[in-house]
Length: 386
Image (cartoon, rainbow, N blue to C red; front, side):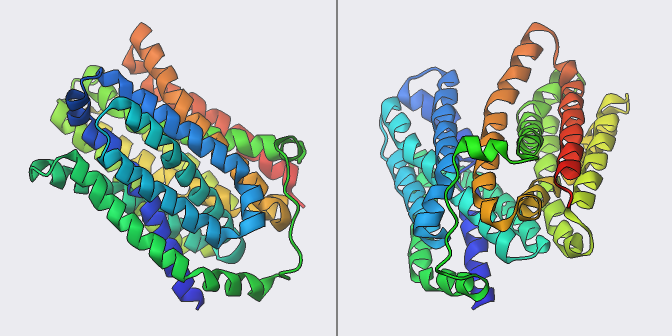
């Protein structure tokens, strides 16, 4: 039963990644058909991010009241409805409308599943869980590409992914009993933790440090994904086609790295793997800074991706150890919100700096985020050490 439920959880995280790259892959066609400026994709993205932040902050109350299984099933169903809504949207305002359940569903799945796996499974499964997200994030744009090149239109791409989400929703509903059995194996069903407010979470020793750590990590990851290509083209003189391939290696490094990290995660402490990942990121940034040509840029982006691999899952998995199982859902929910804020704000900030100054600041910008992340993580470890 445990293995069956774990399979369901893995599939759920693949589904979480599936929609993430759809808008970016389809927007070059969508904005022309809807006759809106290309920059308006940012508005849709901001609405989705706002929804994920809101649902992450409410995940503690929802999970305590309804359970992780029900929250996950309803969240995937909301995402499924939003995808089908996107597929029938003929105007921009409809995209904005369906972006609301899109974001709310994604945040609910993320926070609920991360906490559930952190509480009930080993560190290796947390790494493999986020590897599953990488698979989903890679498959989604591929399906959209098939829809566009096959002449089916971007609407079909959203419909195909929506049908996958529909099948997963049915699977999650059928598996609700497994979640209850797994929960009852290690806890007293009569004992339910009390939902915590944001102020109470922030008052926990070490909470602010872990929030800044997560903020910096997700800001670094999202800034790299968004601006690495522009940096390579504008500051390193690399062709657009080559730069696009190099950026894909960054995500490949994250996905492969998390798969490999799962094989060693149970042998090392989460803090050790986080520090190792941070060191690898710094090595990748040094490769980007040195005048090593295309080979240095290639090695740098791949190395940064490999360094990013263990940090996100290990920070999440260590949360119950740092803050206690009874408070982990509340803390993880706020961590997810902090992550989305970092992903939402810091890439545009770099864009503003690059516009005024130069894209050559890219590795230095990432190095500043890296330094703050290291400082806050060390403060977290010292402040919560038993």
